[in-house]
Length: 389
Image (cartoon, rainbow, N blue to C red; front, side, top):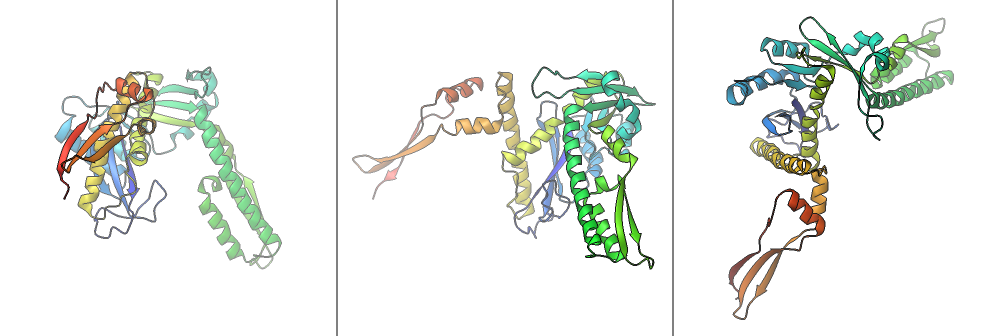
């Protein structure tokens, strides 16, 4: 699994050549950024990382990453399946994977689902069903395999994704129409009349809601002199209904023509491993923001964060294999009440002694240590520190 993320700096980082302004995935484009590329295996363990400047284009990194992985590390005997999301899966990158004979599973950058509107309309009747309706909180997914000339595609329709996308679309559409209504009210009250000014306002509204603006046609009625706007109106286009039909739908392309639709879908969902890695790096391991101002220290900060994630993932996997599915943040909170203390004392001859010891673990602490096969993680340590003057 391969993906990129970026994080921001606190401070100007003017002497850091990697700190460059660009598109921030955390909505912090006001700060200099730095980018981390990460390759993880199907167990979630990082096998390769690379640091880029903050304005690095995601699709352009794939060729270099594949070359370095092949030359330096793993891929000489067996080529693995490369799993990527639509941010990296450009047409050129697909051709690159095909040219180097890498097996792949990707969601294309272009909206391929528009080519299969008829199939998605009948998804519940004609697709394979995944998921269990009897389990609370489970999301049902419907999949269908379609063969192409040199690969195959899997059409996917997710009920959970549909609800999420529909809610987002509804909110955007509501705000878009409210802005148009406010503009219409301003025109009717003659607060704004000049055609150029009204057109400018319309352009700003469209720019604010591009995903909704393309589904509406706006018309301005002008006076006899073609200078002032008399009224403004809009109409919903048929494309809006088409958008509603493919809400929750996506299309995967893969070279695995021999696998079934369910197997391909489950392989693609392992991409969540790299997304979980970025989440853990940013929320649990202090990956963001970057306080270091020099390039060398910044690179060390990112590298140590990746090493820390190795340990975090190992702990979570050990617990998961034992039936404990809690995340690291929960485990950390539970163990935070088991303290390590230093007792400082002076004997009759004024010698200073430090005794480092742990408190008595509670039942929940002991259970976590048992699952991790830890018997005595921190033993009692006694040391002499000199003589009091």
